[in-house]
Length: 328
Image (spheres, rainbow, N blue to C red):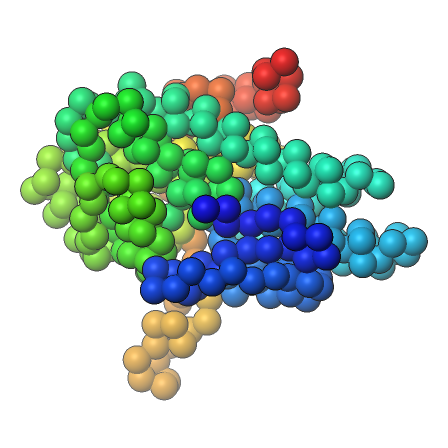
């Protein structure tokens, strides 16, 4: 099912907050609606946010036709709706560079993401055993990307290729994207899966013979440091201790070639009430953490698998030909 789409005078989206109990489709008719959908996680997942933001800019161009300053101000509001995920800024900037063809450029970004997801999945197949257990954190399927998915798409591609994988799924605090969305998508795809609480990831690696871990990303620095949903860093540490390959599946658009390390990645903090039990409890509730590149076995991209040293491999990725050129 499409998670985002352009709907004439609005941007349509699947409200991820209602899943898995309900499938609710909504329409963002204004820039306020677009910003709210991103900020409240009705639309989430770095590539999906990028596509949704691109369509949002196309909508803003339609709403502010003839008033370029108002249009650009609206686009910047969309761009700033979530600061950690670089795909949003990348997509907004790209649509802004297509005056008069905003909707066409947004649709092109969407189509390219579908191709990117397919290529990422194909690149991952040989990384998995013919039979075995794997683990993932957060949600990286079609709902989060607008295509087949990134990390989850890797498992689905391997499943279609005949590999028999069983996926252990972290619930993923604080909003349970793994429990609500990843389990839903894996069942839809027909993959065997088991839900675990976040704090059980390490014992699952120890007791369940996990053969590989694949997660997504929201922003990747030039040295390979990677921001992803909170809890990813702990999973990577446990994987390193147990000698389990730990991969990041992400498109080139998630790499931020302008920053040297994860120290420069802004980390959003969410409302304390999401985790607070007593009214006066002090709370630290970051939405993301940063996994150092040294803990990452490889990056699964539409260009293949990047191996360390990432200080060389990631900057080289910046100069690869775009997918449109690859497809000609």
